[in-house]
View (cartoon, one colour):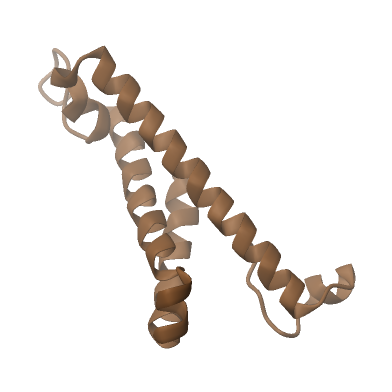
Length: 125
């Protein structure tokens, strides 16, 4: 999912064309978003199945346990994952062909910003 430019050292090294790089970029991007959605859905399902009463502390960085200010690492890590997933969904919506073709400037700005958050927050998650 590296950045794609018409002149790229990666393309020249691989001997690939710009159009083939864009195709690979699209397939890899949709694959990543699909895997993230699947991961998120299965974990939410698992947490709800365990007991929906505990869902807030599992997905949000709120104090939990006997200590008044006990650090909730699980909630923090999962909350970062939720933020990453929101960025990924915004990225996916703005990457649809309809939006991309009708509003390319909006697509491009949104794509750069949300992909940054999707990758960074996903890595932290």
